[in-house]
Image 1 (tube, one colour):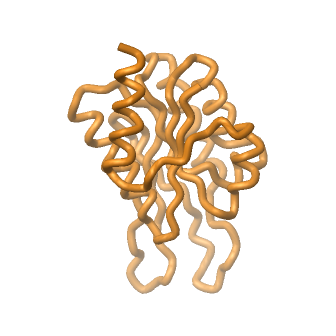
Image 2 (cartoon, rainbow, N blue to C red):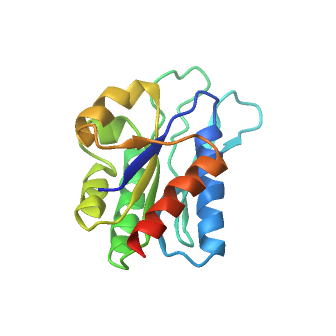
Length: 170
């Protein structure tokens, strides 16, 4: 089972790291499935917009709800998330080289979202790479049963992990 994760504390770093890694793999001809996220500032707001790009080539789906400036709760739009999940599920049928998921988040911690697809990819021996934040670390640890490998949260760490997998399967 090849399940790896990165954990960062800097806002947006995990998203940028996974986005750039996915781009690098695509440039090298790898077959990808999953989602990577980008956050963009919303003028006049302290909230950002959250978009996920379904790998390999889109579409881009806005996954946040605009709840107002005083909102403090979760802004995730569950309908948009499930739309992304359905598209990634279809991508698993192409037997990708790797599944990249931007975050094992609240929905995954509760057994929804991408969690079933992560398990399906692992059952098919498809390597899985994802981001995990401190809030969902315990749920991820329970899900992974301790088999997940934390890798260095930098381009070199990602390349070393995936390069090692490629050498092992050759």
